[in-house]
Image (cartoon, rainbow, N blue to C red; front, side):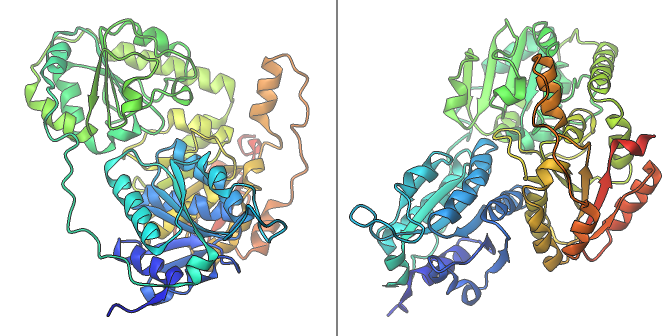
Length: 528
Protein backbone atom coordinates (compact mmCIF):
# COMPACT_ATOMS: atom_id res chain seq x y z
CA UNK A 1 0.00 0.00 0.00
CA UNK A 2 1.32 3.47 -0.83
CA UNK A 3 2.12 5.58 2.23
CA UNK A 4 -0.61 8.12 2.96
CA UNK A 5 0.52 11.60 3.96
CA UNK A 6 -1.05 15.06 4.09
CA UNK A 7 -1.40 16.41 0.56
CA UNK A 8 0.85 19.36 1.41
CA UNK A 9 3.70 16.95 2.08
CA UNK A 10 2.93 14.83 -0.98
CA UNK A 11 3.18 17.91 -3.21
CA UNK A 12 6.76 18.51 -2.08
CA UNK A 13 7.63 14.87 -2.75
CA UNK A 14 6.05 15.14 -6.20
CA UNK A 15 8.02 18.26 -7.04
CA UNK A 16 11.24 16.56 -6.00
CA UNK A 17 10.38 13.62 -8.26
CA UNK A 18 9.83 16.11 -11.11
CA UNK A 19 13.31 17.55 -10.67
CA UNK A 20 12.63 20.48 -8.32
CA UNK A 21 15.53 20.92 -5.90
CA UNK A 22 14.90 24.45 -4.62
CA UNK A 23 11.75 26.23 -3.44
CA UNK A 24 11.55 29.93 -2.58
CA UNK A 25 8.94 31.26 -0.20
CA UNK A 26 7.70 32.29 3.21
CA UNK A 27 5.75 29.94 5.50
CA UNK A 28 2.53 30.98 7.20
CA UNK A 29 -0.30 29.36 9.08
CA UNK A 30 -2.24 28.91 5.84
CA UNK A 31 0.50 27.15 3.88
CA UNK A 32 2.43 25.39 6.63
CA UNK A 33 1.23 22.00 5.42
CA UNK A 34 3.16 22.63 2.20
CA UNK A 35 6.27 22.84 4.36
CA UNK A 36 5.69 19.51 6.09
CA UNK A 37 7.40 17.52 3.35
CA UNK A 38 10.13 19.88 2.12
CA UNK A 39 13.04 18.57 4.18
CA UNK A 40 11.77 14.99 4.03
CA UNK A 41 11.73 15.21 0.23
CA UNK A 42 15.26 16.62 0.18
CA UNK A 43 14.32 20.03 -1.22
CA UNK A 44 16.25 23.15 -0.28
CA UNK A 45 14.09 26.06 0.87
CA UNK A 46 15.23 29.68 0.48
CA UNK A 47 13.52 32.03 2.91
CA UNK A 48 12.71 35.38 1.34
CA UNK A 49 11.85 38.53 3.30
CA UNK A 50 8.82 39.36 1.13
CA UNK A 51 6.79 37.27 -1.27
CA UNK A 52 7.67 39.59 -4.14
CA UNK A 53 11.30 38.83 -3.40
CA UNK A 54 10.53 35.11 -3.37
CA UNK A 55 8.96 35.44 -6.80
CA UNK A 56 11.90 37.36 -8.23
CA UNK A 57 14.27 34.78 -6.74
CA UNK A 58 12.32 32.01 -8.44
CA UNK A 59 12.47 34.03 -11.67
CA UNK A 60 16.22 34.52 -11.40
CA UNK A 61 16.74 30.87 -10.55
CA UNK A 62 14.73 29.77 -13.59
CA UNK A 63 16.65 32.03 -15.94
CA UNK A 64 20.01 30.84 -14.64
CA UNK A 65 19.25 27.13 -14.31
CA UNK A 66 16.91 26.47 -17.22
CA UNK A 67 14.59 24.74 -14.75
CA UNK A 68 11.27 26.01 -13.40
CA UNK A 69 11.46 28.37 -10.46
CA UNK A 70 9.01 27.30 -7.74
CA UNK A 71 7.58 29.42 -4.93
CA UNK A 72 5.29 28.65 -1.96
CA UNK A 73 3.09 31.49 -0.65
CA UNK A 74 0.12 31.91 1.65
CA UNK A 75 -3.47 32.80 0.89
CA UNK A 76 -4.44 36.40 0.17
CA UNK A 77 -1.66 38.91 0.81
CA UNK A 78 1.09 36.37 0.16
CA UNK A 79 -0.27 35.70 -3.30
CA UNK A 80 -0.93 39.38 -3.94
CA UNK A 81 2.65 40.19 -2.99
CA UNK A 82 4.10 37.72 -5.48
CA UNK A 83 1.83 38.75 -8.34
CA UNK A 84 4.24 41.47 -9.49
CA UNK A 85 6.93 38.84 -9.95
CA UNK A 86 4.42 36.56 -11.70
CA UNK A 87 3.63 39.37 -14.13
CA UNK A 88 7.32 39.91 -14.84
CA UNK A 89 7.87 36.20 -15.46
CA UNK A 90 4.87 36.11 -17.80
CA UNK A 91 6.12 39.09 -19.80
CA UNK A 92 9.69 37.79 -20.06
CA UNK A 93 8.81 34.13 -20.81
CA UNK A 94 10.13 32.61 -17.58
CA UNK A 95 9.10 29.22 -16.18
CA UNK A 96 7.72 30.05 -12.73
CA UNK A 97 5.28 27.91 -10.76
CA UNK A 98 3.57 29.51 -7.77
CA UNK A 99 1.75 27.22 -5.35
CA UNK A 100 -0.48 28.84 -2.78
CA UNK A 101 -3.04 27.85 -0.23
CA UNK A 102 -6.57 29.20 -0.40
CA UNK A 103 -9.61 29.33 1.84
CA UNK A 104 -11.98 26.37 1.75
CA UNK A 105 -15.12 28.49 1.46
CA UNK A 106 -15.45 32.12 0.42
CA UNK A 107 -18.98 32.51 -0.98
CA UNK A 108 -20.91 31.81 2.23
CA UNK A 109 -18.40 33.20 4.73
CA UNK A 110 -16.90 36.63 5.24
CA UNK A 111 -14.25 38.09 7.52
CA UNK A 112 -11.82 35.19 7.35
CA UNK A 113 -8.07 35.64 7.67
CA UNK A 114 -6.47 36.54 4.32
CA UNK A 115 -9.82 36.46 2.53
CA UNK A 116 -10.08 37.73 -1.05
CA UNK A 117 -13.12 38.01 -3.27
CA UNK A 118 -11.60 35.90 -6.03
CA UNK A 119 -8.01 34.85 -5.44
CA UNK A 120 -7.87 32.48 -8.40
CA UNK A 121 -9.00 35.15 -10.85
CA UNK A 122 -6.69 37.78 -9.38
CA UNK A 123 -3.65 35.61 -9.97
CA UNK A 124 -4.92 34.67 -13.40
CA UNK A 125 -4.64 38.29 -14.52
CA UNK A 126 -0.82 38.21 -14.38
CA UNK A 127 0.09 34.66 -15.39
CA UNK A 128 -0.56 32.04 -18.05
CA UNK A 129 -3.22 30.28 -16.00
CA UNK A 130 -4.46 30.06 -12.44
CA UNK A 131 -6.50 27.11 -11.19
CA UNK A 132 -7.78 25.69 -7.93
CA UNK A 133 -7.15 22.03 -7.18
CA UNK A 134 -10.03 20.61 -5.14
CA UNK A 135 -8.51 17.15 -4.81
CA UNK A 136 -5.12 15.49 -4.62
CA UNK A 137 -5.57 14.12 -8.12
CA UNK A 138 -6.34 17.59 -9.46
CA UNK A 139 -3.25 19.03 -7.75
CA UNK A 140 -1.05 16.33 -9.24
CA UNK A 141 -2.54 16.75 -12.70
CA UNK A 142 -2.09 20.52 -12.66
CA UNK A 143 1.51 20.28 -11.50
CA UNK A 144 2.29 17.80 -14.27
CA UNK A 145 0.50 20.01 -16.78
CA UNK A 146 2.59 22.99 -15.72
CA UNK A 147 5.83 21.01 -15.94
CA UNK A 148 4.91 19.67 -19.37
CA UNK A 149 4.01 23.11 -20.70
CA UNK A 150 7.28 24.53 -19.39
CA UNK A 151 9.05 22.02 -21.64
CA UNK A 152 6.88 22.26 -24.73
CA UNK A 153 5.30 25.73 -24.81
CA UNK A 154 6.55 29.26 -24.47
CA UNK A 155 7.50 29.54 -20.79
CA UNK A 156 5.04 31.53 -18.70
CA UNK A 157 4.29 31.86 -14.99
CA UNK A 158 1.49 29.65 -13.66
CA UNK A 159 -0.44 29.44 -10.39
CA UNK A 160 -2.04 26.53 -8.55
CA UNK A 161 -3.99 27.04 -5.34
CA UNK A 162 -5.09 24.28 -2.98
CA UNK A 163 -7.72 24.66 -0.21
CA UNK A 164 -6.29 24.44 3.28
CA UNK A 165 -8.43 21.44 4.21
CA UNK A 166 -7.14 19.59 1.15
CA UNK A 167 -3.54 20.35 2.11
CA UNK A 168 -4.19 18.96 5.58
CA UNK A 169 -6.06 15.88 4.36
CA UNK A 170 -4.46 12.49 3.81
CA UNK A 171 -3.55 11.64 0.22
CA UNK A 172 -1.81 8.91 -1.71
CA UNK A 173 1.51 9.77 -3.38
CA UNK A 174 1.51 11.37 -6.80
CA UNK A 175 2.08 9.09 -9.79
CA UNK A 176 5.70 8.68 -10.79
CA UNK A 177 6.95 11.01 -13.47
CA UNK A 178 6.46 10.03 -17.10
CA UNK A 179 9.18 7.97 -18.75
CA UNK A 180 9.85 10.55 -21.45
CA UNK A 181 8.42 13.13 -23.77
CA UNK A 182 7.96 12.66 -27.48
CA UNK A 183 8.01 16.26 -28.65
CA UNK A 184 6.99 16.82 -32.25
CA UNK A 185 7.37 20.60 -32.37
CA UNK A 186 9.96 21.62 -34.92
CA UNK A 187 11.01 18.11 -35.95
CA UNK A 188 11.49 18.93 -39.58
CA UNK A 189 7.88 18.93 -40.71
CA UNK A 190 8.14 22.62 -41.65
CA UNK A 191 9.36 23.25 -45.18
CA UNK A 192 12.12 25.85 -44.93
CA UNK A 193 13.05 25.82 -48.60
CA UNK A 194 11.01 28.99 -49.35
CA UNK A 195 12.88 30.84 -46.61
CA UNK A 196 16.23 29.54 -47.84
CA UNK A 197 15.40 30.68 -51.35
CA UNK A 198 14.28 34.11 -50.17
CA UNK A 199 17.47 34.63 -48.15
CA UNK A 200 19.69 33.44 -50.97
CA UNK A 201 18.01 35.80 -53.43
CA UNK A 202 18.02 38.81 -51.10
CA UNK A 203 20.60 41.55 -51.49
CA UNK A 204 20.01 42.92 -47.99
CA UNK A 205 18.68 40.14 -45.73
CA UNK A 206 18.13 41.18 -42.13
CA UNK A 207 17.56 39.11 -38.97
CA UNK A 208 16.00 40.31 -35.72
CA UNK A 209 17.23 38.02 -32.97
CA UNK A 210 15.37 37.57 -29.69
CA UNK A 211 15.99 35.65 -26.51
CA UNK A 212 14.06 32.67 -27.87
CA UNK A 213 16.94 32.07 -30.30
CA UNK A 214 19.48 31.50 -27.53
CA UNK A 215 20.10 27.84 -28.38
CA UNK A 216 20.46 28.49 -32.11
CA UNK A 217 23.78 30.31 -31.84
CA UNK A 218 26.18 28.30 -34.03
CA UNK A 219 23.69 27.40 -36.76
CA UNK A 220 22.22 30.90 -36.76
CA UNK A 221 25.67 32.44 -37.08
CA UNK A 222 26.42 30.13 -40.00
CA UNK A 223 23.20 31.14 -41.76
CA UNK A 224 24.02 34.83 -41.28
CA UNK A 225 27.52 34.35 -42.66
CA UNK A 226 26.34 32.37 -45.67
CA UNK A 227 23.80 34.89 -46.89
CA UNK A 228 25.61 37.99 -45.58
CA UNK A 229 22.67 39.00 -43.43
CA UNK A 230 22.80 41.95 -41.08
CA UNK A 231 21.11 41.61 -37.71
CA UNK A 232 19.60 43.44 -34.78
CA UNK A 233 19.42 41.98 -31.28
CA UNK A 234 16.68 42.56 -28.76
CA UNK A 235 17.93 43.14 -25.22
CA UNK A 236 17.10 39.52 -24.40
CA UNK A 237 18.79 38.35 -27.60
CA UNK A 238 22.21 39.86 -26.87
CA UNK A 239 25.01 37.33 -27.06
CA UNK A 240 23.19 34.88 -29.33
CA UNK A 241 25.45 35.91 -32.21
CA UNK A 242 28.93 37.38 -31.67
CA UNK A 243 28.91 41.03 -30.70
CA UNK A 244 31.77 41.62 -33.14
CA UNK A 245 30.00 40.04 -36.12
CA UNK A 246 30.70 42.81 -38.68
CA UNK A 247 27.05 43.15 -39.73
CA UNK A 248 25.59 43.20 -36.22
CA UNK A 249 23.74 46.47 -35.58
CA UNK A 250 23.48 45.50 -31.91
CA UNK A 251 20.68 46.11 -29.42
CA UNK A 252 19.50 49.34 -31.03
CA UNK A 253 15.95 48.52 -32.10
CA UNK A 254 14.60 51.08 -29.64
CA UNK A 255 16.48 53.84 -31.48
CA UNK A 256 13.92 55.54 -33.78
CA UNK A 257 16.38 55.61 -36.68
CA UNK A 258 16.64 51.81 -36.58
CA UNK A 259 13.38 51.78 -38.54
CA UNK A 260 15.24 53.43 -41.42
CA UNK A 261 17.81 50.62 -41.38
CA UNK A 262 15.07 47.98 -41.34
CA UNK A 263 13.41 49.71 -44.29
CA UNK A 264 16.52 49.04 -46.39
CA UNK A 265 16.13 45.25 -46.04
CA UNK A 266 14.57 43.16 -48.80
CA UNK A 267 13.96 40.12 -46.57
CA UNK A 268 13.48 40.19 -42.80
CA UNK A 269 13.55 37.19 -40.46
CA UNK A 270 12.43 37.66 -36.85
CA UNK A 271 13.47 34.68 -34.76
CA UNK A 272 12.52 34.03 -31.14
CA UNK A 273 11.15 37.52 -30.52
CA UNK A 274 7.73 39.05 -29.94
CA UNK A 275 8.74 42.28 -31.67
CA UNK A 276 6.96 43.80 -28.72
CA UNK A 277 6.57 47.46 -27.82
CA UNK A 278 9.38 47.12 -25.30
CA UNK A 279 11.63 45.82 -28.09
CA UNK A 280 10.80 48.49 -30.66
CA UNK A 281 9.15 51.43 -28.85
CA UNK A 282 7.06 51.88 -31.97
CA UNK A 283 4.11 50.08 -33.48
CA UNK A 284 5.81 48.72 -36.58
CA UNK A 285 9.23 47.20 -37.15
CA UNK A 286 9.75 49.41 -40.20
CA UNK A 287 10.00 46.85 -43.00
CA UNK A 288 8.28 47.04 -46.37
CA UNK A 289 9.61 43.69 -47.59
CA UNK A 290 8.47 40.13 -46.75
CA UNK A 291 8.73 39.23 -43.06
CA UNK A 292 9.35 35.66 -41.89
CA UNK A 293 8.64 34.81 -38.24
CA UNK A 294 10.13 31.79 -36.44
CA UNK A 295 8.62 31.16 -33.01
CA UNK A 296 7.07 28.50 -30.79
CA UNK A 297 4.18 30.82 -29.93
CA UNK A 298 1.42 30.96 -32.57
CA UNK A 299 0.32 34.34 -31.23
CA UNK A 300 3.61 35.87 -32.37
CA UNK A 301 3.10 34.47 -35.86
CA UNK A 302 -0.23 36.26 -36.30
CA UNK A 303 0.36 39.65 -34.68
CA UNK A 304 0.14 43.14 -36.14
CA UNK A 305 3.56 42.87 -37.80
CA UNK A 306 1.76 40.71 -40.42
CA UNK A 307 4.40 38.14 -41.31
CA UNK A 308 4.18 36.76 -44.84
CA UNK A 309 5.26 33.38 -43.51
CA UNK A 310 4.94 32.09 -39.96
CA UNK A 311 7.14 29.15 -38.98
CA UNK A 312 6.03 27.32 -35.84
CA UNK A 313 9.32 25.83 -34.68
CA UNK A 314 12.06 26.13 -32.13
CA UNK A 315 14.78 28.49 -33.25
CA UNK A 316 17.57 25.96 -32.85
CA UNK A 317 15.75 23.29 -34.84
CA UNK A 318 14.74 25.73 -37.58
CA UNK A 319 18.30 26.99 -37.98
CA UNK A 320 19.73 23.46 -37.98
CA UNK A 321 17.30 22.59 -40.78
CA UNK A 322 17.87 25.84 -42.66
CA UNK A 323 21.66 25.79 -42.58
CA UNK A 324 22.24 23.00 -45.16
CA UNK A 325 19.68 24.57 -47.50
CA UNK A 326 21.54 27.87 -47.73
CA UNK A 327 23.55 28.96 -50.73
CA UNK A 328 26.14 31.74 -50.62
CA UNK A 329 24.83 35.05 -51.90
CA UNK A 330 26.21 38.52 -52.52
CA UNK A 331 25.09 40.84 -49.74
CA UNK A 332 25.08 44.58 -50.18
CA UNK A 333 25.39 45.31 -46.46
CA UNK A 334 28.70 47.03 -45.70
CA UNK A 335 30.54 46.41 -42.43
CA UNK A 336 31.90 49.97 -42.33
CA UNK A 337 28.37 51.37 -42.66
CA UNK A 338 27.16 49.15 -39.81
CA UNK A 339 30.08 50.26 -37.63
CA UNK A 340 29.40 53.90 -38.46
CA UNK A 341 25.73 53.57 -37.54
CA UNK A 342 26.58 51.89 -34.25
CA UNK A 343 28.90 54.79 -33.53
CA UNK A 344 26.09 57.27 -34.14
CA UNK A 345 23.78 55.40 -31.77
CA UNK A 346 26.49 55.28 -29.13
CA UNK A 347 26.85 59.05 -29.40
CA UNK A 348 23.09 59.43 -28.97
CA UNK A 349 23.23 57.30 -25.82
CA UNK A 350 26.06 59.39 -24.40
CA UNK A 351 24.23 62.63 -25.16
CA UNK A 352 21.03 61.41 -23.49
CA UNK A 353 22.72 60.09 -20.33
CA UNK A 354 26.14 61.72 -20.13
CA UNK A 355 29.02 59.90 -18.46
CA UNK A 356 27.38 56.55 -17.83
CA UNK A 357 29.09 54.78 -20.74
CA UNK A 358 32.52 55.36 -19.18
CA UNK A 359 31.38 53.79 -15.91
CA UNK A 360 29.73 50.88 -17.70
CA UNK A 361 32.88 50.14 -19.67
CA UNK A 362 35.07 50.32 -16.58
CA UNK A 363 32.73 47.88 -14.86
CA UNK A 364 32.69 45.49 -17.80
CA UNK A 365 36.48 45.36 -17.82
CA UNK A 366 36.50 43.52 -14.47
CA UNK A 367 33.32 41.42 -14.76
CA UNK A 368 34.06 37.84 -15.86
CA UNK A 369 32.63 36.78 -19.22
CA UNK A 370 30.63 34.00 -17.57
CA UNK A 371 29.01 36.33 -15.04
CA UNK A 372 25.21 36.26 -14.84
CA UNK A 373 23.94 39.83 -14.58
CA UNK A 374 20.56 40.97 -13.26
CA UNK A 375 19.57 44.60 -13.65
CA UNK A 376 16.75 46.81 -12.49
CA UNK A 377 14.85 49.65 -14.13
CA UNK A 378 17.57 52.29 -13.86
CA UNK A 379 19.38 54.55 -16.32
CA UNK A 380 22.65 52.78 -15.66
CA UNK A 381 21.12 49.54 -16.94
CA UNK A 382 19.39 51.25 -19.87
CA UNK A 383 22.77 52.44 -21.13
CA UNK A 384 24.45 49.11 -20.44
CA UNK A 385 21.76 47.23 -22.35
CA UNK A 386 22.76 49.18 -25.46
CA UNK A 387 26.57 49.26 -25.17
CA UNK A 388 27.70 46.26 -23.09
CA UNK A 389 29.06 43.61 -25.51
CA UNK A 390 27.58 40.27 -24.45
CA UNK A 391 29.70 37.22 -25.26
CA UNK A 392 27.14 34.68 -24.01
CA UNK A 393 23.42 34.36 -24.55
CA UNK A 394 21.01 34.59 -21.64
CA UNK A 395 23.60 36.06 -19.28
CA UNK A 396 22.01 39.50 -18.81
CA UNK A 397 18.49 39.58 -17.40
CA UNK A 398 16.50 42.79 -17.36
CA UNK A 399 12.79 43.24 -16.44
CA UNK A 400 11.90 44.57 -19.87
CA UNK A 401 8.32 43.43 -20.30
CA UNK A 402 6.45 44.17 -17.09
CA UNK A 403 9.06 46.77 -16.21
CA UNK A 404 8.93 46.32 -12.47
CA UNK A 405 11.21 47.96 -9.94
CA UNK A 406 12.98 45.91 -7.28
CA UNK A 407 13.89 43.03 -9.60
CA UNK A 408 17.68 42.97 -9.64
CA UNK A 409 18.67 42.02 -6.09
CA UNK A 410 16.27 39.11 -5.41
CA UNK A 411 16.59 37.80 -8.98
CA UNK A 412 20.37 37.81 -8.63
CA UNK A 413 20.03 35.90 -5.36
CA UNK A 414 17.99 33.25 -7.14
CA UNK A 415 20.49 33.18 -9.99
CA UNK A 416 23.37 32.70 -7.59
CA UNK A 417 21.53 29.80 -5.93
CA UNK A 418 21.23 28.16 -9.36
CA UNK A 419 24.95 28.65 -10.18
CA UNK A 420 26.94 28.11 -6.98
CA UNK A 421 30.54 29.18 -7.32
CA UNK A 422 29.92 31.12 -10.54
CA UNK A 423 29.92 34.93 -10.71
CA UNK A 424 26.64 36.81 -10.37
CA UNK A 425 26.15 40.58 -10.41
CA UNK A 426 23.19 42.82 -9.53
CA UNK A 427 22.70 46.37 -10.86
CA UNK A 428 20.04 48.58 -9.28
CA UNK A 429 19.09 52.23 -9.01
CA UNK A 430 18.63 54.08 -5.74
CA UNK A 431 14.83 54.07 -5.93
CA UNK A 432 14.23 50.55 -7.24
CA UNK A 433 16.73 49.07 -4.77
CA UNK A 434 14.51 50.14 -1.91
CA UNK A 435 11.65 48.01 -3.24
CA UNK A 436 13.50 44.86 -2.24
CA UNK A 437 16.44 45.95 -0.06
CA UNK A 438 15.26 43.57 2.67
CA UNK A 439 16.36 40.61 0.56
CA UNK A 440 19.94 41.52 1.49
CA UNK A 441 19.18 39.46 4.59
CA UNK A 442 18.65 36.37 2.44
CA UNK A 443 21.88 36.96 0.49
CA UNK A 444 23.80 37.35 3.76
CA UNK A 445 22.27 34.18 5.19
CA UNK A 446 23.34 32.31 2.07
CA UNK A 447 26.87 33.73 2.18
CA UNK A 448 26.67 34.78 -1.46
CA UNK A 449 29.62 36.52 -3.14
CA UNK A 450 27.29 38.98 -4.81
CA UNK A 451 28.46 42.43 -5.93
CA UNK A 452 25.52 44.86 -5.99
CA UNK A 453 26.07 47.98 -8.06
CA UNK A 454 23.86 50.75 -6.67
CA UNK A 455 23.53 53.71 -9.03
CA UNK A 456 22.37 56.73 -7.03
CA UNK A 457 21.59 59.84 -9.05
CA UNK A 458 19.40 61.12 -6.22
CA UNK A 459 16.13 61.05 -8.09
CA UNK A 460 13.82 59.24 -10.48
CA UNK A 461 15.95 60.65 -13.28
CA UNK A 462 14.27 58.77 -16.12
CA UNK A 463 10.87 60.07 -15.01
CA UNK A 464 12.21 63.58 -14.58
CA UNK A 465 13.62 63.49 -18.11
CA UNK A 466 10.33 62.16 -19.47
CA UNK A 467 8.36 64.91 -17.71
CA UNK A 468 10.62 67.58 -19.13
CA UNK A 469 10.32 66.17 -22.66
CA UNK A 470 6.51 66.27 -22.23
CA UNK A 471 6.75 69.88 -20.96
CA UNK A 472 5.59 68.89 -17.49
CA UNK A 473 7.26 70.59 -14.55
CA UNK A 474 9.08 67.70 -12.76
CA UNK A 475 7.02 66.65 -9.77
CA UNK A 476 7.54 63.94 -7.13
CA UNK A 477 10.80 62.72 -8.65
CA UNK A 478 13.09 63.37 -5.68
CA UNK A 479 12.96 61.40 -2.44
CA UNK A 480 15.18 61.41 0.62
CA UNK A 481 17.49 58.41 0.42
CA UNK A 482 18.90 56.55 3.40
CA UNK A 483 22.59 56.03 4.06
CA UNK A 484 22.83 53.01 1.77
CA UNK A 485 26.23 51.95 3.10
CA UNK A 486 25.05 51.79 6.70
CA UNK A 487 21.80 50.15 5.63
CA UNK A 488 23.68 47.37 3.85
CA UNK A 489 26.01 46.89 6.82
CA UNK A 490 23.00 46.64 9.14
CA UNK A 491 21.99 43.52 7.22
CA UNK A 492 25.49 42.10 7.58
CA UNK A 493 26.61 42.89 4.04
CA UNK A 494 29.81 44.66 3.08
CA UNK A 495 29.59 48.11 1.53
CA UNK A 496 31.86 50.68 -0.06
CA UNK A 497 31.62 53.95 -1.97
CA UNK A 498 34.51 54.08 -4.46
CA UNK A 499 35.58 57.56 -5.47
CA UNK A 500 37.30 56.62 -8.73
CA UNK A 501 36.71 54.10 -11.49
CA UNK A 502 39.85 52.24 -10.46
CA UNK A 503 38.54 51.93 -6.90
CA UNK A 504 35.23 50.66 -8.28
CA UNK A 505 37.05 47.99 -10.25
CA UNK A 506 38.98 46.91 -7.16
CA UNK A 507 35.77 46.73 -5.11
CA UNK A 508 33.96 44.63 -7.74
CA UNK A 509 36.88 42.24 -8.17
CA UNK A 510 37.08 41.69 -4.41
CA UNK A 511 33.32 41.29 -4.09
CA UNK A 512 33.28 38.32 -6.48
CA UNK A 513 35.60 36.52 -4.04
CA UNK A 514 33.93 37.49 -0.76
CA UNK A 515 31.90 35.41 1.67
CA UNK A 516 28.93 37.79 1.67
CA UNK A 517 27.21 40.29 -0.64
CA UNK A 518 28.76 43.70 -1.11
CA UNK A 519 26.97 46.94 -1.94
CA UNK A 520 29.09 49.13 -4.22
CA UNK A 521 27.66 52.63 -4.14
CA UNK A 522 28.13 54.73 -7.27
CA UNK A 523 26.99 58.25 -8.04
CA UNK A 524 27.68 60.60 -10.96
CA UNK A 525 30.38 62.17 -8.77
CA UNK A 526 32.64 59.21 -9.51
CA UNK A 527 33.46 60.89 -12.84
CA UNK A 528 34.48 64.23 -11.29
